[in-house]
Image 1 (cartoon, rainbow, N blue to C red):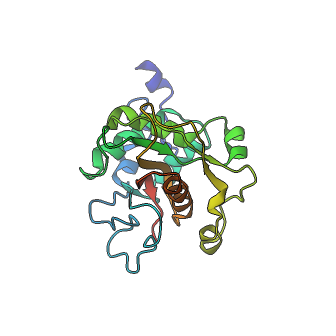
Image 2: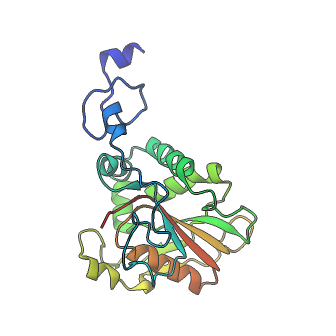
Length: 232
């Protein structure tokens, strides 16, 4: 296209002009440095094996998985969706999630009310950004997995911010700050199997609090799926 020649798109990560077609967020060099984790990750915490003493051993979710480590160009991709409102990235992230997921990761749509459950963001930050990025990611995953989206989790407006807090502080987060909203189940009734959807898995404290709230409400099984995993 003439516009691409006159004003070449910039790579989201390195901010250099890219010869890729318009709409491709990464240049070829940055794509080659994406830190794919591959199949050899701990099924409980999603850290590359060996993870040693598993930090998710007592977490309420049964399994965690992410296709990428939170390194290289990945933070730029995540922040572009979350902070800059680059909504088209949700589709790219969802496509990468589905294309690289283990074959047994996604529950069958008819598996006892299986649904994608977005991790709720901080209410103040969501209002400031004007988007709910985890809900966007979940909605992009829905047609690719055949699972409905069930936005049944809410977070207290008075909840302490997790970003920037130390690991010990995050792990002491009060699970009561995450609640299941009654009457907000999936399209076919209550959620029985929940796939928690978030952008980055760091300590797992938020995922644990969400999974605990879901299980306390009657959800049988919770799986945590994120676009990236912070590496230990």
